[in-house]
Length: 77
Image (tube, rainbow, N blue to C red):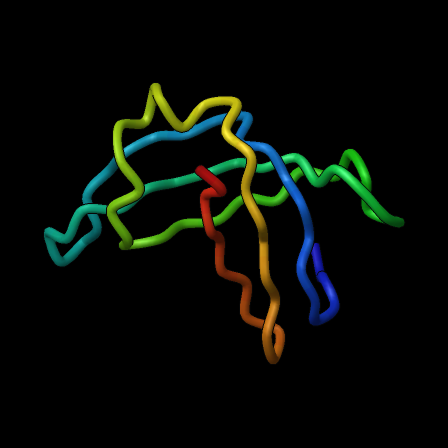
């Protein structure tokens, strides 16, 4: 899915911790977008950032930010 640059309110609907090929910890997230044209769409992201316990992340509000076509996520605690 291609998202245009901007900020998208979302909620974490799935989360899994894993290890990358180089041994670094990864967090795989699925987030449901909450507003706008893409409301209800699910975005899958993988980050190397430590976002905390994966069970605690479920249901957390988040913001998906796209800059120059590259998405990032912030958990809104």
